[in-house]
Length: 147
Image (cartoon, rainbow, N blue to C red):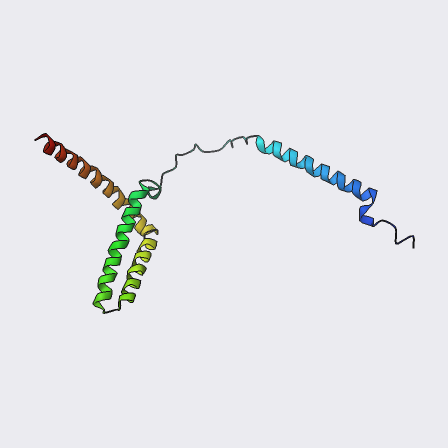
């Protein structure tokens, strides 16, 4: 009976002391790691001079203009799908399914590399067309109001 009242082996004073020592060693190792990670690494001696990264044209430009170009492309594809659906005498529901599918597929395809360049070029062209149109419109308004 005295054996059944004995404390389990994992809760002895020796075991608890061992766990305390392990915890303190681990805490010290974490402290050392934090101190080492704060110190900047010396630059490698044979490192080449840093080159300025070339910006991807897909990451530059106006996001709104690119969105308008993608929407216009999707609308044009939807219009063509609508004409094709009516020409092939599909029902009204099937025609609208074709329109929606054409719009979504065109938007998805405009995110891939071949069309991304075209979207960027059309967005830049649209920007300059808007600048010129606003300039000409402003001149026209000025001359109309001054007369």
